[in-house]
Image (tube, rainbow, N blue to C red; front, top):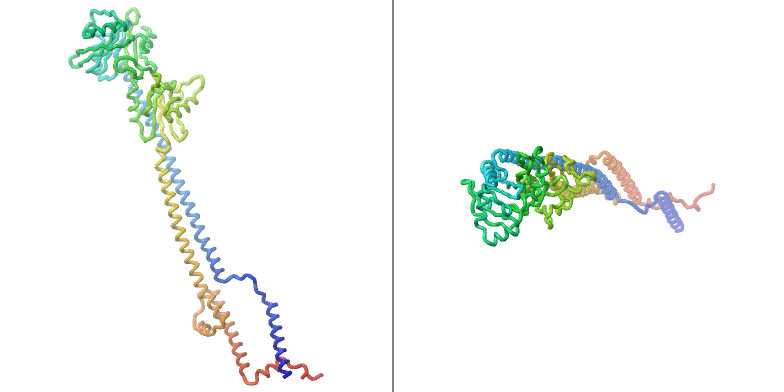
Length: 517
């Protein structure tokens, strides 16, 4: 009995010693990572590198390509805008310049006709010369002649109110039939006004087929040709220096174009003694300038305006009036239209303080506040200046829309690709974990749980296709086999009759049984 207790104590001491040895050799870590977690992290890193970097590169390339395409488009649009505006400005300048030249030539022709065939003081003779010009040349402008005695005759086209005549009070030319005729239908009140006005004026009808006038009606207004700008300008010349001149812009008065702004081409007539006899004039009204300028514009928000060399606004493509509330022409610098005011002020600031002449800026092109614009000037009288331009958006608006569309498509593609990438990533991780589980983890689970039935099954399978895993499996299978063999041997020894006491006495003999040497 004593020997049995001694053997038990000896076995317990050996187990305690082995347990202490195990603790000294193997220390459990506080934090351990499952192999599937390692596989997941590895797969995540690899998938991130494989998927994200190419995505970044491809999206960067797409953005660069989009920017390059739109930049190229804008550059092309800018060059096209400059060309379009040059064409617009050139056409408008040629149109206005051509009209001025025609009027200049017609004025010279009328000077030759009146000088050669007319009595320069007889309104009948002058009327028929003007009517011939209208009929045979198709001249639609208002033409007139004023004498030194303030007599005046005007014609514009034909028909109702085509003639306007004015003579001073007491004017008596026995050879002037129209002077005697046009007052025949005046009433007593009309004649009273004649005295107050110190002259008489009337509208009349003209028939260019029969060359006859009729139906004169009194026009109650005062008009003195010799006081008008066109007459005063022509009177500054002398008989040795006769030429066509153009007045500065002014507000018309009287006649069929009352209260309308424009200029007048004029030329004086002198008698043999060099005394001024009268002045011929042709009005160039600004009333049709608006529609004419609009016809040259090629984009929705383009603008064009015409100014004098000193900056007075005489025509614009906008609906703005060129005459202010006081009846004076406005300056382009003070225009109510932003595009006109901004561009005019910029050009004004480019001129020297002592010479504000816009013709000095002929050919100037500018880009300012989102607009392209240029300035062109006539190099001959009346030296009109044309400014035309347009907002950049008129030329680049479609390109901006294309860029926005590309950006929208890019964002949509990014969302789709990210969605696909996430799906691929999840699939890769799932497949990797499944493969890892069946190729490594399940084997280790079977081994650590001493599932030898699974070991028997593994003996009938081929190793992994992966070299390293196959080697691990082979070594691991051998280890399991040796371990299983040792356990079976140990179990067989324990189950043999009499081996338990024999093993106990052999393993730990009692010290009291030892014989002294």
